[in-house]
Length: 179
Length: 177
Image (cartoon, rainbow over all chains, first blue to last red; front, top):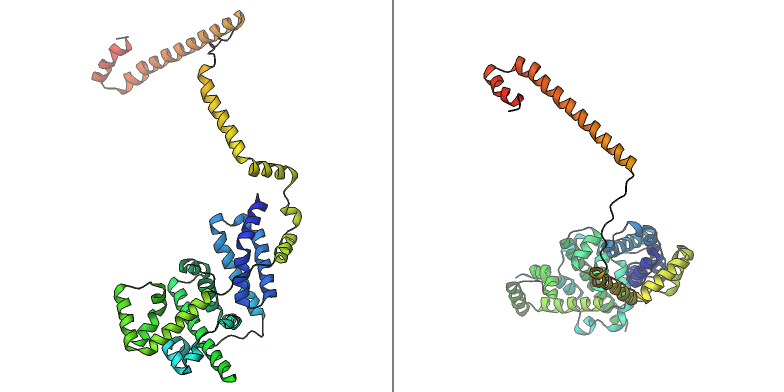
């Protein structure tokens, strides 16, 4: 029965694990390795995970494995987040960039660029952005999985969105100038 | 509402997680501050963009490697388990139906089954004689113990430890009254 249960769980969660890892790490080969590692851990721990807790366990272990992988990457570049970035409002961010309407239009062909910017977000913020905005998970589930209060989840999400927006606008501005 | 207050509430505003009063304040602020109105548009746009990012499928090769790592043999059910699972998965409704018929049959047929008088056990004459002797012996022991207890009560406890009115009250009882 364990085999059947395992197969069902694998089929149900393999894509979610892979996507979380792919957006967190930013490259497919590592995402595949992480997915593999998480699923093997699941096999070895399945006997001690309650059925209701499987989902939370998977997201938690995926996140932790992603963080381990990311830390092993010495050349990993992350967007620096300083006090000014945290305090600055969206309005101030945009005013600093002084964009015009043409520059501000976030084009559809920058999906890859967004993925790269997500990958450069600080770990705590990155997890929240991926789980909430990309995987559409609920705040309380994210809070439980990461082990932080819901308010912190919301604050990190807000910071993450602002950082992404700032990076995107910078990118659009430079891109526009190049043309 | 200040621009900073707007910044604090923008995420909740997008998700509709604010009160009616807060909503009015935000909309009033929009009319007064074009910068915040613009900022809100781009903030909303980035949120929408994130929500529509593609969800990729995990390659089958990954799952094959996983199954290989946890030993494929482990994942293959044994012959008996396979039969059991096949029967259970493919014929579950038939099994349920058969069980229901059996249970119903038991309930319908049970009252009509012929009632048989219980047959008393048969003992030999020797066994009966032995049982009688055992009972007589047990009664004799019982009689001895009660007589002895009565004597101890009368001669040792009542006479030595009880005051006269109580001793008098006990006399009819001990005399068989």
